[in-house]
Image (cartoon, rainbow over all chains, first blue to last red; front, side, top):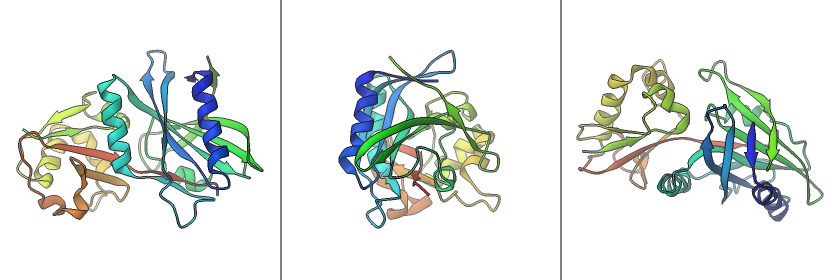
Length: 144
Length: 92
């Protein structure tokens, strides 16, 4: 389960509207709870570096991620997931999303943005033991 | 001593440690020390041919080692090496 506040949930959905028709992306900082859930404390917006195809691709600069990770650790937060948008495309993971996912145990949140308006938001957890057996499983979002 | 920051998905293979001190003079040595101390990390960082996986980014402080001297990049006391699996995807 992925728990996040109403404002965090609204923020990541709004980000997708702001960057439409391009994909947005960002990092979810928070904690891994003892019950296996994750609680998001902050949503950090990132720059989509895929200038060659921003309407259907996203990528986060590792340097930006290091800065976010460092800042998070100073606050006692960890990277628990990521989010991006699918402009005029369903909020389901794609083969590209799976191939490019490497953060096991983390959440990958996808928001479909239809004609500029955020529609469905789904979360998927990357599970598995290595690249060969990895898969996404549906994950419940709890807005608190 | 330099230290290596371990990202959350790999901590299950590093004894749950978020940071590992490594007595090493170069990035290559540091990574070798890391996988010798935590052998389960090896297959997540390297291919069967022994090459660093393409999606594994290694930064020395704020610099990508690929734009420094790669594995031969010299380390100083207190340097931070970050292992950062890439974050990317797309709608189809």
